[in-house]
Amino acid sequence: MAGKRRDDLFDDSSMSFGEHLDELRYRLIMSIYWLVGGFIIALIPGSWIIPGSNLPSLSGWAVSFIQRPLTRSLHSYYVGQSSDRIKGQMKRLEEMGYSPDIALIPARSGMADREVWLFPDDIARLRRILFPDQADSAETAAGPASVFTNEQLLAMADNYQKPDDGVPGGELATPQSQGAVSFIFWEKLADDPRIKAKSLSMPETFVIFLKAAVFLGVLIGSPGIFYHFWAFVGAGLYASEKRYVYKYLPFSLTLFFAGAALAFFVIFEMVLSFLLTFNAGMNIDPDPRISEWLKFAMILPLGFGISFQLPLVMFALYRLRIFTIEAYWDKWRISVVIIAFLSMMFTPPDPWSMICMVSALISLYFLGILLCKLAPVPKLEDDDEDDA
Image (spheres, one colour):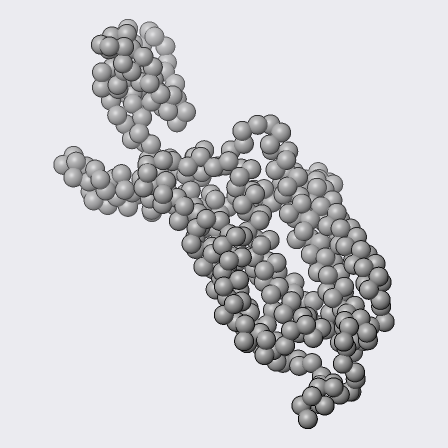
């Protein structure tokens, strides 16, 4: 049906500018309610939901879940390091009678090697453990020896860092100067503390718990938050156009969760693998801190999820007659530059996350143009007069 051209955005609206501000305030307050509701749900202990269970709260579970990309990347890093060390020693190992298949141990078994140094006293203890029948009476009288744990072996490896008065010049003793022998032992990386993030203070874990609850609050409350956002946008549409708020709300949520999932399940490991190559190149083992990782793990998925709203934002601006399809087509080169700049600002300092965000947003930009074409704005009387 034909209508009049709007010289002012609110000419044909049933709401004045002040009423639109009141509507904005109302929608913001309602969105905060949804966020707080999601935050509270994330804090509820699992034992309250299932009495007698040991289930953690959603926030505690989220902290563990969010660490998975980091754990997988560190797992691959240490397996790769072990493989490289074995390959570097293959000539010596083959001379000792080992099969070349030994180089496949890390990748096949998910295990990593550790080098430790055993000193003469430690070797004597180990000999009594491995060959008890050969122990003489003096050794037997010393009492039974316990089996070495990984922690004990690593503690032995630290012994050679202590000063030795017998070393000329007061230098730090070397393992060889103390008669130590190098051993390599293997351990499952699932039990290796090197692949677990660490906290540096007691209050830090509590802050992490609350941050994870806020992150889950956004995810849990996202249906209500997005509804009120698009309801506010709908206040500027014609009555016949308000149905688009309900029609495209599921589309909006799908894009949000798709962007967050892309960041979490794909982008994270690409970014971490890229950054860990520098650790390997400079021979510096990573020691990730949980607070730094969580900040990175929360911002990137939310950034991807919100940026994936681009086609719907374009459609809303088109329906409000702020932009036309022709304007979107004419300015696509400038839009690509803006997208690249914003992607550079809102992604970590690595090329992969920026490339992925730029590629996704450029595709969504043209999807937004297609969306506008599929639901064109009805022509008004003044448009026909201008064409004449």
